Image (cartoon, rainbow, N blue to C red; front, top):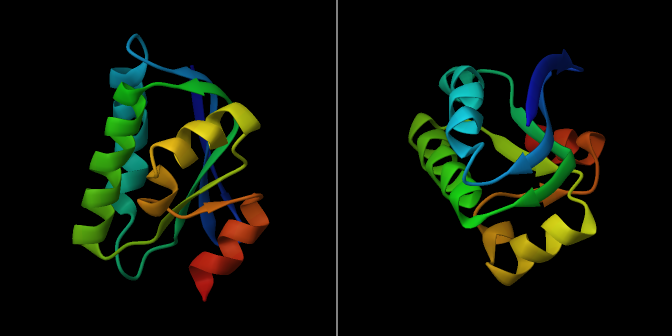
Length: 115
């Protein structure tokens, strides 16, 4: 798994590539920590770009659940973009798409987060 962050058009975009599973979930949580800590009420929104994520397990979903709780407590804005069909199906089946807003593209996520 690889995680790289960049600022794009007033958004903090976190690109994730690879599998988010038992072996990588701890590293995933650590890699997200700086972005999540900065995601507060008046800070730039954060978009997790999942276009490169090929698989996510329940352990990976737990990391995202904890992130969603943290962002809610901080009154920040967080969304996910670019789910591939396999990962989108996992989000739909687990109803995780109701926990964090999911969008087709980073641009769509940015528009939604800014409104």
